[in-house]
Length: 203
Image (cartoon, rainbow, N blue to C red; front, side):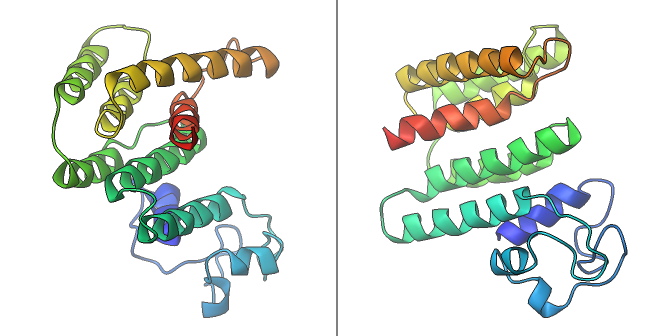
């Protein structure tokens, strides 16, 4: 599952996520079966292409490990399927946001539709959807994608926790802007929302 989502991040929406088969983006050599074992293949090659030596990003490893860990925790009964779905969605959208500086609406919609089917709509969900619509129409100085992910988080967190998530992610974002000197660059905010939500889940 994590490997497939990695392909989605790499190719969507410009290229097909099914064809051609997995290959090195640099030398175009098709990957063999032993190159496609989640986590193990990347560790065994030290995150390099076996054929041309091109360095792979570690986010593939992060995504595969996150997906696997979530499946294990859900199977142990320590985490609900809805929560796992929202966390995995946040991980995928965060990587996509950092890599492409775009918000994959269709990816969010699929994950969130599944989460809604497993839970139930609430007023906060609808409120964040409305705010996301306003952010698309008017300059609210916050991305509609951030509000859409907050809508997803409202399916698993009460309003008090959502306010904490907004506060924690905002402080973390400000710290990142100052420490990395990103005052003139747009900052992907979804990763900070995911960080704050994971922090609350752990606490």
